[in-house]
Length: 133
Image 1 (cartoon, rainbow, N blue to C red):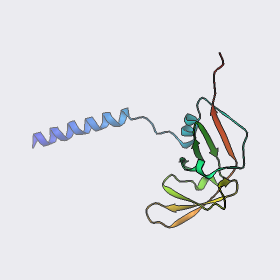
Image 2: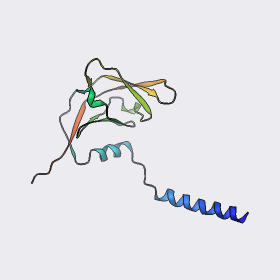
Image 3: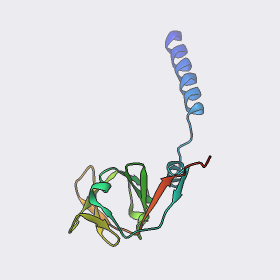
């Protein structure tokens, strides 16, 4: 019985030490700032090519980030509060571009039920800043 109690006490101490050393989770805004470190914003545009939208990161209640080569395109939808990185985004495009005011439906990953929609805003390109010699 003492061995079990000792084992439980040791396990509790190990777990407590692990949680104390865990890094604090970044907010979506902090994650976006980290992604954009060393980058400079360019002129916003209304559309990006749809093939540029395949590599996408959803930042809860904040923004969508699309990676195209070394450029990050940031879109802050009008109703960004509906963004949830656990939802699946379904895009309905009419051409080869993803544009401002296009609608993306959100679908629950677990139930498959449509949970809402996102109205896209402007796409802002962020490119790495090159240091002059």
